[in-house]
Length: 211
Image (cartoon, rainbow, N blue to C red):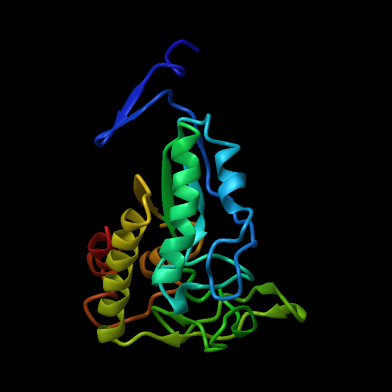
């Protein structure tokens, strides 16, 4: 246990020990994606962890899939997350914002714009999702054009910049659990014929360029 409680340097940040709080979806954000009023208190209460990783936070409007999840792509989001970061820092903690684009795992009822989900290919996940109208089947997504894939990569970069602007100590990109980065990697979700599909090297291109 001595090793667990020893200090750790993560990039240019010194952490007091090696225990981190994993990201957990809270569904408490305001309708437009700004962190809720209780978010600063919630995260500050957990600041004794070596590192706090926030709930999944969408890098764009199309990145949202679940009800009341926060974003980090406009000025209001930055202002909301700055309150969280300030509260965590005042309590002696460190904060990373997790960037999560859900891709096809979305439902129009859960987003402000009510658009069809987007994904590497027009293949539905075959699952149900909780919405304001109860459990509903996730619809078939729209395949992103090559230009839109590149814009989505730029959206991740903008979100990371916005997170640092908000006072976060870093970001974590969610690349697992069937969300967009994982969808590009998965041959059952990615049937593209451009440079982002086909071979393993091409299917990995999105994740590599996002990182």
